[in-house]
Length: 187
Image (cartoon, rainbow, N blue to C red; front, side):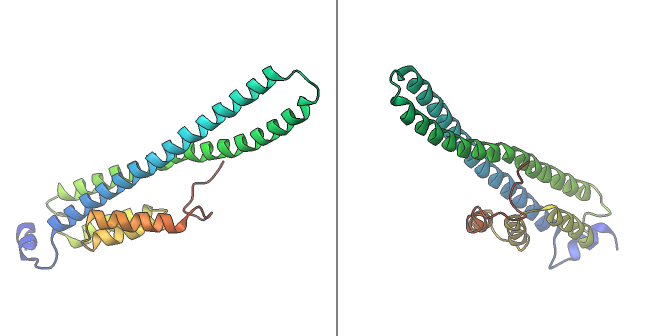
């Protein structure tokens, strides 16, 4: 049986449907990456604004320091500001590390689309269920986050992009800031 007949005889499986699912998956990956990037940029903006304000406050206090009794209050303020700065610096480091996660995710999208293109450009593999399943297995095994795997499974079952994104966001929100294998590692 040739590839053309093999494609047209399949009633339950379709390479077109598989292609659409893979494209939907790419859309989901891009959407989640952009949304998570916005969160990271907002964190950086907030942290750097607070750091600049703390530096300005310390500078102003130094300029106004004229009496020895003011030194005790100044020391207390410097300790408090230093503590807040440490928190903001840690948040900034995590936000900067997110850049690596963005690059990884976009690389996954690129590699996934490359694999789909390879199968689609091969008349021999275009209509072979096994070729499509291999791509899907490779893609799913590249995910490090449970939220990504759940989103993948939902899309591969024919789910919508909007629902897959909701599932992803719920999973991420439910995991919170717990330290597990899905989190970004600090240096």
